[in-house]
Length: 366
Ligand code: ADP
Ligand code: MG
Image 1 (tube, rainbow, N blue to C red):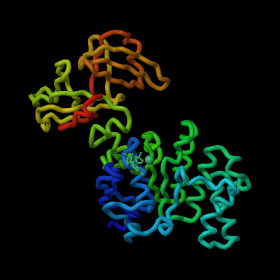
Image 2: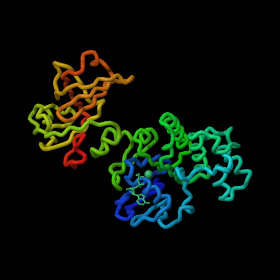
Image 3: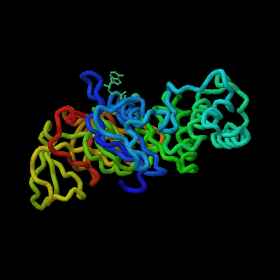
Image 4: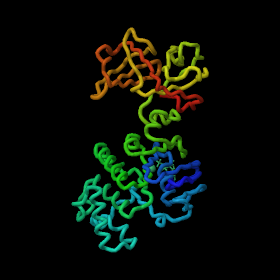
């Protein structure tokens, strides 16, 4: 194991009756890293986090922390910080006593406790609220108290399961950045679970995308966005357009493809190196901001412009091409005047198009 790996899980398997919640997961988090498990509901995120916390036994596989096998160590002896929805604050204790609790059970002397509790309350910007009870705080403030309580004893790892799930969107965004700042300040090692891709992008150094009890891809937010390894990742992180095509053998005209449903032949971006493109069926995925749109006189894939919407910082177009609808995001807005709905429009994919082969039927649909 690399020396900077804080905690590692190897070949984790876990079933509940016939449901295989984890089907062989191997993953490590480095010291000081913020890692997010991102995936749809039921993909196994909580099961994986609980295995790391020690809340249940794996059917197979191991958990290693700081080079030591802790697979059979009970949760309370792992000493990890936890922010889970069911790990609510103690309602009968003040904010200060809640945060002091982990120090008290660890036998930290009262004088040291007081100073440290105040330091962590200030860290989460609740220094003035120590005497309040949880019910006298807003939802966002309560989650910050929970964060202070989870971090105050300096755990080697902080585990968070959908900590902002109950908060409204605006509040969630401001707390995301606050948590990220605190994590960076403390150089804390974090494994965080969410099904919200924006939250994952905003907070994480590394994201592990989960699906059906397996990890589909691990990478930085930028990696996953620009170089998704599978159509599922392309669709789950950010928005993506899907086109079923037949790639055409390179013949000097640059890489081209035939759209399966309409038969149109179109160029697929100069960056996709034609020489390495073997002909055959493929799925193209392209981000809305990587599609250019033009009116009559343009070239590319022809479709019908069905909607044109001003979104504040960009124009959004929907273009129907056969059975599929492509979304185009235009931050420049230069085309907005020339395009009318309904009318024919032409779209042009740039070199950021992703080409996938051997795609399972369930990943093909847009
Ligand atoms: P996520 O956190 O990604 O939503 P979970 O880890 O909670 O996913 O669940 C993964 C799968 O295991 C789901 O199909 C879920 O229904 C099932 N599952 C989770 N916990 C239990 C349990 N205690 N008993 C039976 N099935 C469970
Ligand atoms: Mg869950």
